[in-house]
Image (cartoon, rainbow, N blue to C red; front, side, top):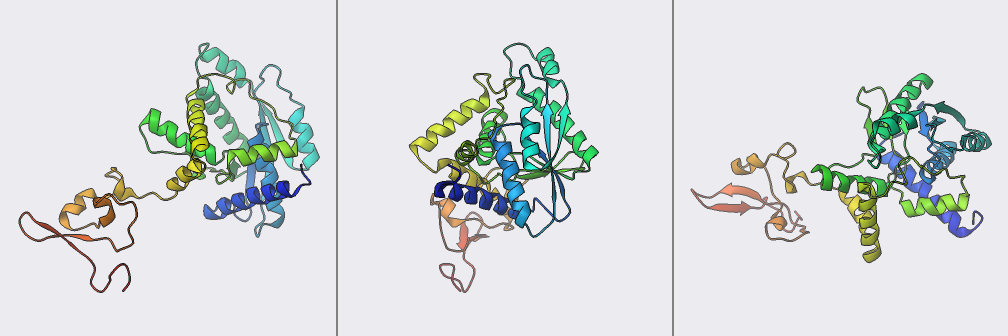
Length: 303
């Protein structure tokens, strides 16, 4: 219920997490005009509410313009979002483009439509942002979306690549931000239910079965049920990357280890996950021997 203590705690948590993400990644600056992309789903409604709340007390001035793309899906309730946005007082733009027909024409029956649909939407969003003079584009992806994308890229693309909370468009004209990057999907779902948003389902791609993302989502749900906090742990790992303990030679000078140019973490040599002493330095002690040298004057990490 909107008037309960639980609701206010949830609301404060979402706003605090969004505020921290905005600060950590410097998502919003003074004078920004932000295009807030509204799909009609729980995530975008929550994002607009959170940004509107933060706007009232932010130390910088920024403008919000909500945007919805009417893709002309059969049965799409085109009156829902305009009516809701009118009630909020937020400036908005409804863009109509029949991407539905294009997707249905180009993609064979039974195949995943998400990729083409996403590309078409992205182009229209960028064009609209330019027309409206918006320098930032806000998307409603949350923590779980970011973790799912990480596993999708790893399982199906062979890359350690996620969904960044902030990035520049290819042409450098806009910056895309994800203010809900620290927020969990379960919190957003509860908040949206309490707010009774007029949710509009995506019948074009959201109902397709056996999508790779859905499989990953189900895997993460099972993990979370078995070990609560697992998804949050994975997300934290994405914020604490140690290039020297991966295998990408473009990120770390592994060759330097052979010529005394790099340091190592002693704990990793012996299989321990955490170790508080200073890293040891490779030092050639002879033709074949290798010794480890700890910085002089420091024992156990204390000078």
